[in-house]
Length: 276
Image (tube, rainbow, N blue to C red):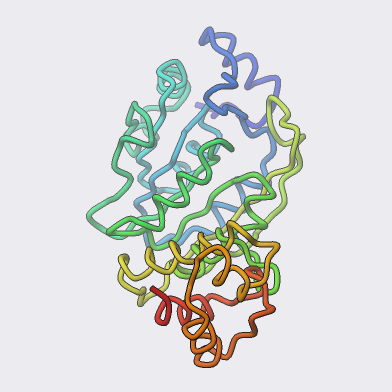
């Protein structure tokens, strides 16, 4: 049986019409109609870790590629019509390696008991929630490869002196690498912005979650005033005593004139050790 070429817009539209459905804007459904991002995901995955959770199977273009490449896929999909569509066009041989999990990815477990990987063409409106949940998992994946809005991808991979709160979160958890920029034309329907394919790999030895969250909480207070200098933020927004500010800056080696985006993740660790 020939597999449907799901990145062909005509084939995709025919399948969706046959299933009596269409992309739903409120669910953030933008289906891939380019092969390059899928090929990049498959080539980046570790073939010795066969268990993969897919966040949002959609019409199944990525799901199908994962199955063809012998991954055991646990696909979480909220839209029941797409679940039925996927069941209908996948050969029985491939379906045996697929577990379709109906429901909201916000409410369901992503984890496996054995080493696993995470992939997803994730809705723009859920990217922040998904990234935060990823960094809080007790048993994180060996790696995550996600398609996100380009601006989010750039924020995740930013370095000093252009750090963001999101890059602080990511660097405390692991490494983030921008793999590919995905044009808006690669989606049906076409979004207003470009996307990015991002690889996320957790540190082998992470700080305890509670310690990471403490640092993130501190950084968040500063990034709420990112145009201001950190010395002024400590004085005027955080209301820290001048003696403590002076001692903190001296002990961390930071300049009071620095702005939050100029601090490295190591700087944030140092600040969290000194400030209440």
